[in-house]
Length: 158
Image 1 (tube, helix red, strand yellow):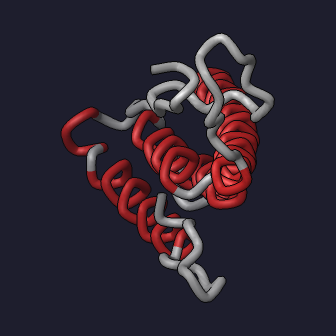
Image 2 (cartoon, rainbow, N blue to C red):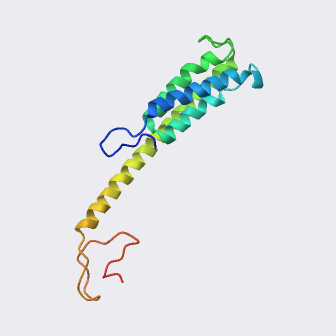
Image 3 (spheres, helix red, strand yellow):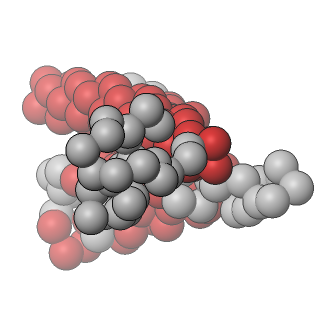
């Protein structure tokens, strides 16, 4: 993830700058794509920065990409460069974009929460590994030390 922290606590990447770049690139592509797709081009390219930011940067960059995409979407439908939405189809397309953005941000939040739990669990396991003392008694004697993680071997389980 480009939002990971470096060893000294500073951000290892620039998730917000990358998010801004992705949104600008996709909005420009959407605008220029009207020559290929016609004036009734869907807003499909504005989904990409939201999803990429959610996967690579987490919740906050995904929210930023969502807000920017939703702000730019009325500017890209006819009449262009206004916040006036003339056709009901365009209102529907923007509402679908809003729902996809909301769902993507919710998924980014779940992903971040899962990553944080996994990191905490891994840190807990690594802390226990340093305090676990392998059993030195015969195999028939039950081991009083906490069980080790899968894949590691202790004298009691050999």
